[in-house]
Length: 277
Ligand code: TA6
Image 1 (spheres, rainbow, N blue to C red):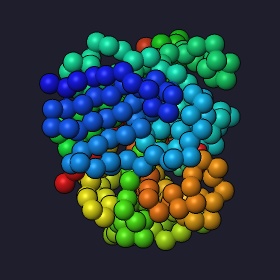
Image 2: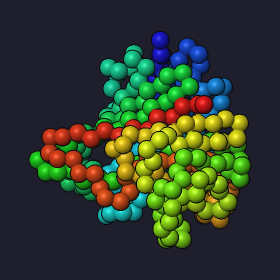
Image 3: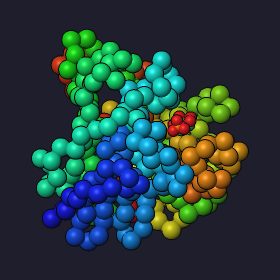
Image 4: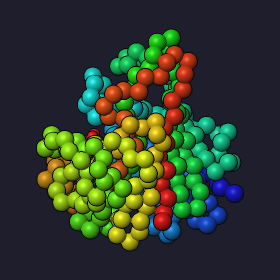
């Protein structure tokens, strides 16, 4: 039986799910942001120790929900509005091993994005695995167009030793060099790495050093994004310690290029599923 508790982390209201075996996941109401996932006696997500924790500024690490805009591909603030907004925890699903948080359009969202919607993030915890699901309901009379990502920051022992498998031959856009190509069999990381891949049909495998993770995503996401700022870019990020880049790798379920269009009254669902192997 999963236990759901209310707690604060760095002064921010959160919910925690805990399984009898000790696995747990911690979610902040700000952004429906997963801050921690523990399984097998270790923390599997990276969370920067330099976050501002003012309830509004984007949280660096965990699983940022980027919606309804990926990066700066549109007129909205970078990575959209969801991560800077307060979501509501819905109590009804807590006893089923899952926690759902909801965010509806409000005056603040409509001031920047004139769209009616309901977004829900469901975090489902099972032994050794975490599923994060984003649901988007278009409650407006007009179509809802969005891009975005589940921008997951995985903890790695040492980025120089980490490797990502499963993208071989997928179309690749290197955003640093602005170069198109195809992915290598195995991705390794030395310096800034910011690339978008066509979604693979099979799960990816992250070798993080002391553990390995299988990373799957729903077919509704068009791409994966793989990001590490490298030492130089990391030094410019006020919310990261200088060596933070050595301890993290983002592997994201993303919609980067063509926006998803949800017709009036319809719903879209996208998930990312993480499991220890
Ligand atoms: O998903 C990769 C990316 O878009 C990078 O270009 C990098 O900017 C990163 O996200 C982090 O963005 P943030 O706004 O959280 O600093």
